Length: 336
Image (cartoon, rainbow, N blue to C red; front, side):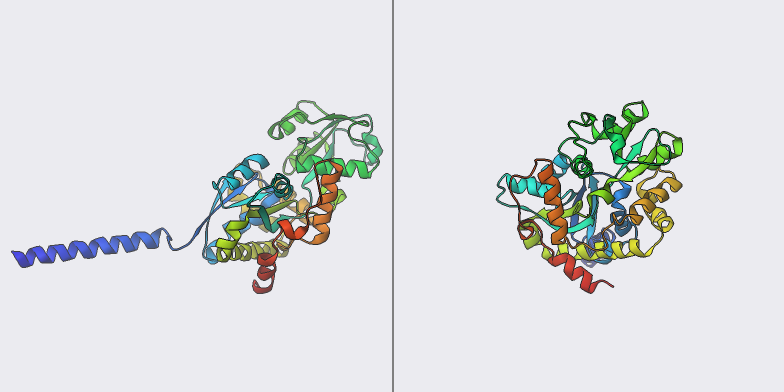
């Protein structure tokens, strides 16, 4: 009887240990989890979804938990409060935090997009376009203080247009409602992201006549960033993240808009495939998707010019204060 009890006891211990081992294997508990907050779910961030869909993060041995923290303020709050580990948001937000005197500054370590992502749409278009046509028009712009609006105003001023004096500028519409406001008849011109621009063109609501991304030049428009302490403590994880991103960026550079669209469609379940293709093609052709994560000095300087023009820059911030290119440079060298 005692032997039988010992046998059953040993058997239960073995079964218990096996169940723990199986659960650990099934849950990939050995992979460090990285909580990433994206400022928006958009085709503009296609390389990120490629990295997820192709399993590049998993190949590097990290488990990425992606969440959409809509809005730059919410995304930065989540990062600073510890709700996420890495934020995908405009690089200008790191400057804003720095200007407030943060003890643990937010550091950009890899850029995803290197141009503005908005386009100028005209409700009526005769086949030609001149920027002077905007003078005196009703212009539906982006939210004041946001990077799209600042890049838009930077472009307008470059073409001799004072947004505050030469336009009937509307910028009190929430980001989520800009497209519907235009569709309901507000604005002769509107500043839109993809895929909304392609959707409206197909519906006959307007025509894309210019790209603010092309006009405002290259800048670290959207980048991955983390608190300096996280980069120090989790440098191995950050390097793996940068490696996976580099894989995705090269894959996007080497593949057609059709292949990219098919890969990222699971992240846009209600989207029309042809619209996604058109949007990816437009971004790809104008070089919006960065081919690597390195933030160049010239891009950083251009960002300063945009912020300075908008009156949002208190003082110049050296690149080395808020950018750590070590991870992106290493990824360029090691990822084939």
